[in-house]
Image 1 (cartoon, rainbow, N blue to C red):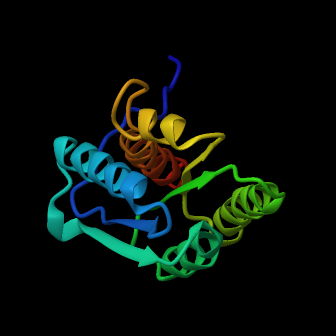
Image 2: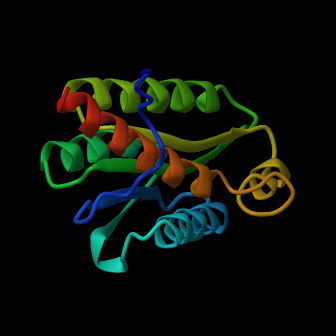
Length: 157
């Protein structure tokens, strides 16, 4: 019989952390609302969610790494919005945040989900934070639940 792993199962007592960027707060507040709603609808209580605000997206990898290394969270979600401007700053921030989150997850062994929008316009960011294109915060929280289950199952094989 084939064993299937990964079903978005919340295990009792699982705790989740959400690191969210204050920069572009109009967008990140919506992402956070989406993530919290997803966790709640999957049975995660408010008491089992920790939200940590950081100044900007660039700070997300370090905070996510620190949260993961606490070993009390089943997964960590990072939420932010980086919107292209007139300079190359966008490229540096996006690249650093993406590789930093991936590295933090590899080093900690804890799932850290990348829920950072990287868009060309504010309109695109708003669309992806709860209007036309869904809510990336919701998606990131669902991915965190599934990955926490996968990591737990793989650890017991």
